[in-house]
Length: 78
Image 1 (cartoon, rainbow, N blue to C red):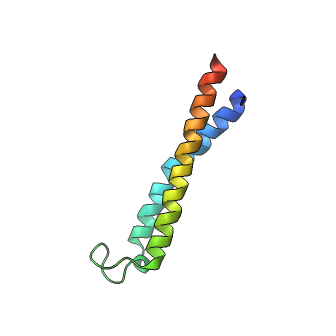
Image 2: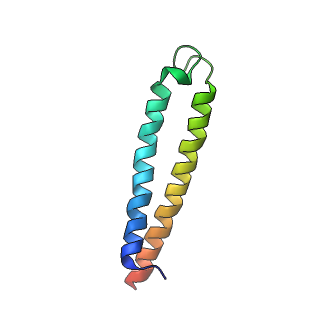
């Protein structure tokens, strides 16, 4: 069983990842290194794809942590 404080920490950590990483994704898309030419109208470069994989992985893990935290918080309230 996870303590209520640990569950809260997991919820905060999950929310942090779900909120922060999409903002970072926008910064990557706006970066000139992500494209071979004009943004969204040219071929994405390795810089784009590496960061897309990292961001997607971080968001999926963040969602998992958030779900575990919410479930643990609910079960500790019973």
